[in-house]
Length: 133
Image (cartoon, rainbow, N blue to C red; front, side):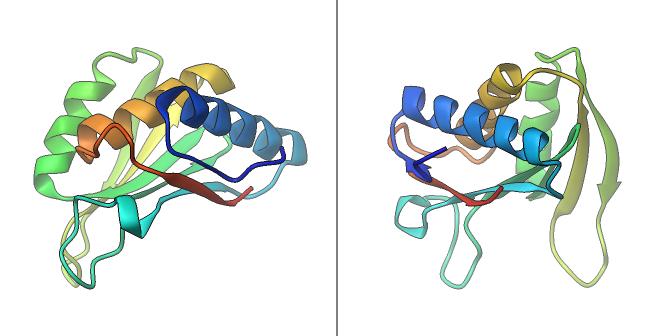
């Protein structure tokens, strides 16, 4: 893997698949995908841009209540994925979601792209970084 960011859908899907493959080949703890703050249309000042982590067969992300509803709709299109855990600590707003995704790197890459675009409602030209593999 030689690049760490992408801002076009085809490039992002390739980046996601390559990073998931590298993560699995290295048996690393996680692969982390962070939206570039300059591309983030979801946050207000001082909020953290959206991120998604892949850890083995799990996909992990933090969502608001509205984003959780959109995520549930998206999961319905991926029968091999299921929400396994929802954590909503009282001390923070939002929900941490753990999804089991027993699928190949390309299918996970497609899901990640759809999650960033559908769940977080990012623009088509958002930039994402692989910050950890």
